Amino acid sequence: MKEKFNILTSTCVPLPLENVDTDQIIPARFLKATTKEGFGDNLFRDWRYDKQGNKIDSFVLNNPVYSGKILVAGKNFGSGSSREHAAWAIAGYGFRVVVSSFFADIFRNNALNNFVLPVVVSESFLAELFASIDDNAKMEVEVDLPQQTITNKATGRNEHFEINAYKKHCLMNGLDDIDYLLTNKDKIEAWEKASE
Image (tube, rainbow, N blue to C red; front, side):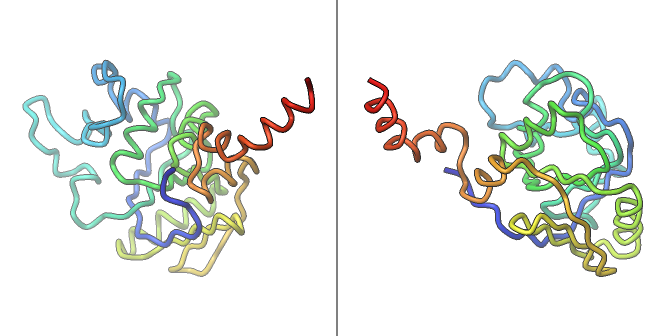
C-alpha cells in the first residue's frame, strides 16, 4: 500500500513549456532499469545537467526558489512514447500532482498507476497559476481529491477536475491494482464458489 491521497496543499514548480514528451521527462538511455529506484534523479536529465554532469542553473528544478509536490506544466504534457518510466521519474522526484491543460492518455494512466494525480484544468486557469507562481514562488495550490477541486490559494479561484472513479478510490486508499484485488479477495472467492 502507498501513501493515501486526500487533500494536498503545496507550493509548485512551474514548467511553462508545451508538448513536453516522455523522452524529455526521462531520456531513453535511462530505460534499461526494471525497478523504479533512482528515476527521480534523472527527471528532465538533459535539461537539468549539461554533458559534463554540471547543473544548469537556469532550469527550474535547479532553482532553489521553487519547490513543492505539484508540477505545473504547459499543454500536452507526457506526449510521445508510452514509457512508464516517465511516471516513475515524476513520482521518484517527489511530485504527487501534475497540473496541465492536456495530458497524453497513456501518460495520464501511467501517472495514476504510480500514485501521481494528473489534474486537467482550463487554459485560463493554467495561465493564472503560472502568473501567481511568477508573482510569488511560495504561493500554494490545494488539490482536494474527494471533492475533485483544485484551488489557486493566491487568487481563491478553483476548478473541478475529472478522474476515473476506480482510480480515485485507489489513490484515496493507497491501493495499486494488486492491492485492490487483495482487498476484494473474499468477494472473489465467494463469487467463484457460487459459480461452481
